[in-house]
Length: 307
Image (cartoon, rainbow, N blue to C red; front, side, top):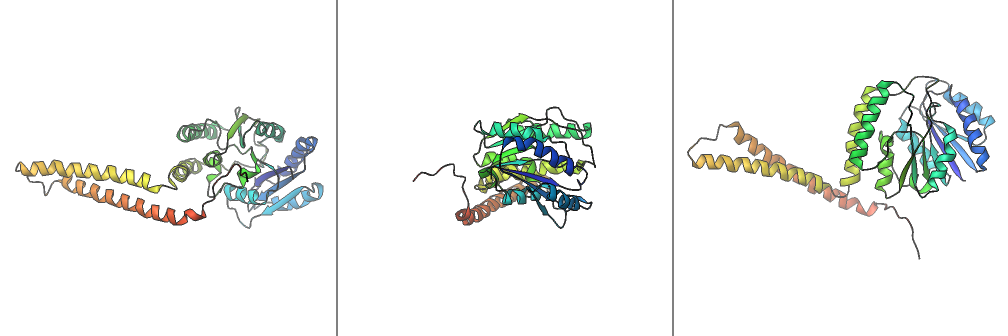
């Protein structure tokens, strides 16, 4: 199998017939053996019925239907598990991603990249969605050090070994480039066409924007401190401990000078900081022990093996 195209879908019954027709028109000329995998994410409309009917017209179509709505990350994760292609394309089902970009994404992969992310350079969305997205992408790019413009673009291309190496859960699909880069793969980006939504309503909300930053903290911790949690907990603990110790030494000097310190709020603050510091260091040591016990089950990302 040359190519797998994975499409998470939630209440997209109107767009799916046009989407599959467009995919066929873009991919058939490439003369590739390919499959289209649609993950019905617990749709409450007629998405599943439409997919059953489309299966008769498109034999390459495969459908996986969830009993309830789990979210985009679980949908992608299940798609990655069953994908058989040497190359994998992901795209949204709402017709905003253009299947005509698939050949361009695949060509970019051949330049030595392991994953290529689309960049909706000329985006056709309301400002209420565009502005938060740009702020989010700017912050993620700066914190991650990955020089791409659109982390959350649904249109992406991967080599097979990439999708089999990453774990996507919760809402971590927004940070797939970070997860891929963390595994040592090479990440690229190309501008892609973006269209206005023609059917249905957007799934974007303000809560999703703020939740994205909490997920960012999760990814940063997993990618930087998962194997060495004492580094972050110990660092925070030492800062708290030494600030508290400094406060108490300062008050001790005052005590020797004849001033009362027992009722001063600063005295209790210093004690609190010392205790918190010791607890942070303890948490770090405990996390290190857990990390060490799980180390034998770690799967490392290996590029090549010669025997």
